[in-house]
Length: 113
Image 1 (tube, rainbow, N blue to C red):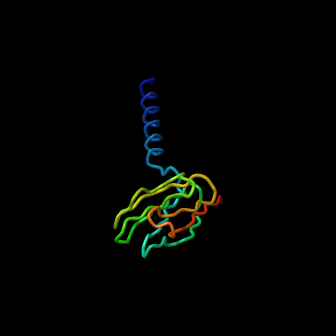
Image 2 (image 1 turned 45 degrees about the vertical axis):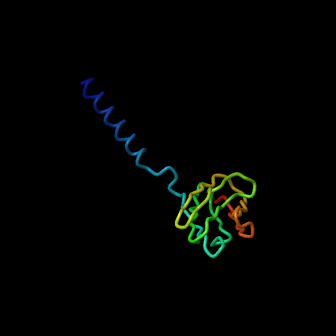
Image 3 (image 1 turned 60 degrees about the horizontal axis):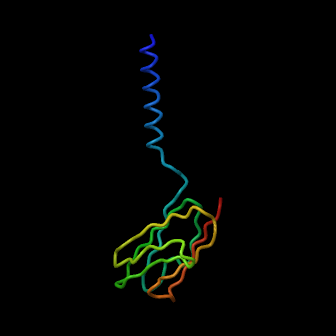
């Protein structure tokens, strides 16, 4: 009887562990896209929620970056077709620029629900 109880307990633990491993970390989190084209970030203003991710994609022939104005994050240099992801955990307003083309400016607003 004890063996059966142990097996059932172990099996239950395995099933719970598997369910937790397969569950998304934050089912409400979304991925948004910012396209870099014609020397502009599109959209130039983006509102998201904490935990969301922004995927930056360069569609220009020249390299660009998306670099936070206060140095909190940076995509690194993105050549044609390259992409980078940044996840925003904290609420706030995050203006950013391309370090190669400082006239390229945009802003991400992270607003709580």
